[in-house]
Length: 203
Image (cartoon, rainbow, N blue to C red; front, side, top):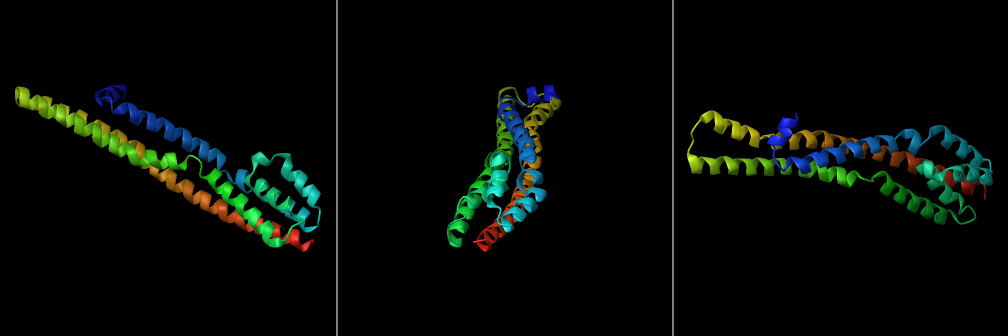
């Protein structure tokens, strides 16, 4: 494997860096986008029951316990902080908090998509550079031994294979994470609207 990396030439360096970045982002997103992290069902039910019974201070205490640990807590807390305001104001505040959470949930996905786009191009660049070297050799010394020519062409294709090897799973995970985020956003919006209605029903 190491020999293949060496034979691929200098273009293998950015492809290797992209593969490491993609792997790191994939692991981080799997951890950060867990359902229990974004939309904890038991916590949602508990907070909704507190708000529905008018125990807003207790609900605020729960949300403030560790607001950095849950998108749901941060959204709900923004609404509870405006509990004395009119319904449309509370809704606007909650919606704004929701939009901020979407940005947080989509963190690093732009970079992941960029990696998926550029690694095949880097692989193609490496192949083109390799073919240029092969044809330069042919023009200088002739075809000579066909096996040597075949070997040179094979080595020039290594970068294309490497670029596709990185890009294919990266594209798959990028789309998967987007679907996961869409599901989380729908669940957060639904839960946040319930909280808004419960807040106003008590005032």
